[in-house]
Image (cartoon, rainbow, N blue to C red; front, side):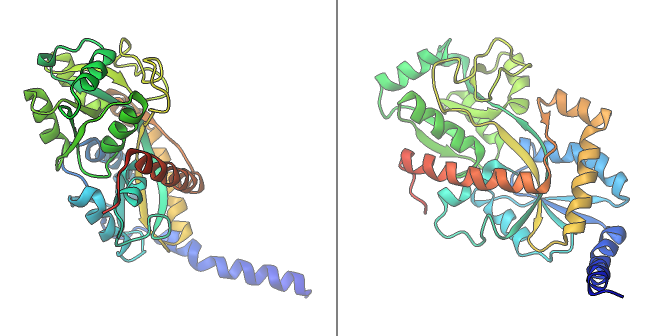
Length: 321
């Protein structure tokens, strides 16, 4: 037998444990940690996908909302979990914001997670209370510039996608506003509806019912194109503000060193779940456009976003703490 053939056989044998691990997994319930509160887009979207993914895998997916510190508490729990495929993280692009916000993260955003698969993306919509009286985004920006120091904005936490959405827009539009973080979307919405907070870049699916009921006014969205659910609302670029796009992705990660075969299997099953007609319908009703990245594509996206968000934070004068 030639050395080349022996080497090929050895390589094949080395792959067998990983293949076996993927074939056997999962044999017990899976825990999915969501680092934001119930009712937020980062909570709702994974639950839609998990409803389909769980029966495909033949095991329940138990969701745990572990909030706090802009999503870093829940993220750290996953980073420190056993890399066996039984503890997963459902997060948003807030994950790629955290390195720009926190100086001493208890984990390395790039090295301590294995990106698995995205579920979908959605733009955020800038919303205000009707009582504010602004009919266009240009009117709101003019009011903010006319009264420096008087404006504030809500987010679901320091380092969240809703936070950086506003920071990018402030830079693009050239006005100041004070950040007011909340523990979750419902609290932020309440404060905007009452008028105690000036504006909020809210995930579109969460804001839609309130916009339709007339409790909130939508002024601009920050996706690359207009949202089908709000066809009359311009994008930030259409409104004249460049480099303010910040569409939110929501997806799933595992601890680093999770077997590649398990990650690949979970990626394939997640894509299958997302493409299921009933799941697509539910995602569409929530304003979510499905995404089907490979683990490598997902990882590359996160790396690029970390660099971009660091630049935005520096330009906005946000100092990591």
